[in-house]
Structures are given as C-alpha cells and as structure tokens.
Length: 70
Image (cartoon, rainbow, N blue to C red; front, side, top):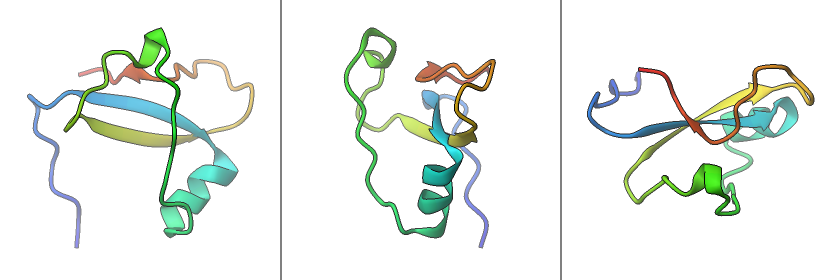
C-alpha cells in the first residue's frame, strides 16, 4: 500500500537523520525522534508533516529543520 500524497497546503519540514538512524526509522525499529526547539524548529506546529531523509555526517547541503521546497 502506498502512502497518500501529501496535501499541498499542509506545512512540510524536511529533517535529516544520519543514515544509521534513518535505516532504523525505515525498518520500524526506531519509532521516536526528539528535536530541541531551536530557532530553525520554531515554525513546526501540531499536524505539520515531517519528512525524514538520510544524510551522511558532514554532508554538504544538509539543511536541518528547514521547510521543504515546494
């Protein structure tokens, strides 16, 4: 079963996870992710969509907690 398409009017935030943690989320082994409310995360609200993606440590272009481009 595929995931439903995201609502284009629903705020989305792309959040990077190190590959080893992303693999655990993807497999269902890791079910909780905690983030500190930094200025970058201040615009995340209840019911926003969080899109996690894997990142290698030190990868260039990683913009932790930034809204995804539309």
